[in-house]
Amino acid sequence: MLARIYKPAQNVMQQGKGATRDWVLEYLPDQPRDIEPLMGWTSSSDTKRQIRLSFATKDEAVAYAKENGIAFRLEEPPVSKIRPKSYAENFKYGRPDSWTH
Image (cartoon, rainbow, N blue to C red):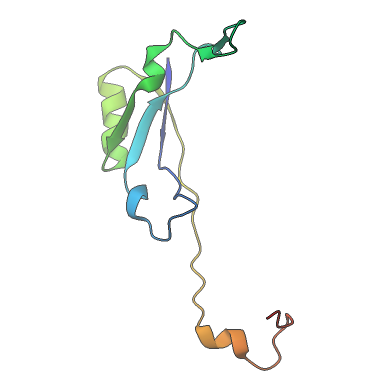
């Protein structure tokens, strides 16, 4: 079974990078979920989809996967650019956008 090692993106409601420091190892599904015809509920017999391990560093996650013989795919996080700007830029003269409120 293939595992995925990645660093989760920050939540939409989150400003800082508090919960995005850990690396996560989780298993990818082997088979699609089954749809129960009467009620329409989805189910799966794959219990490894419930496992989600957190590691402090990428090297720890890779070492764990290699030590336990887990085939894995490593996904590097995208590099985010920080554009410094000040509050005064909202009111500067010659601003390219029109003032909306």
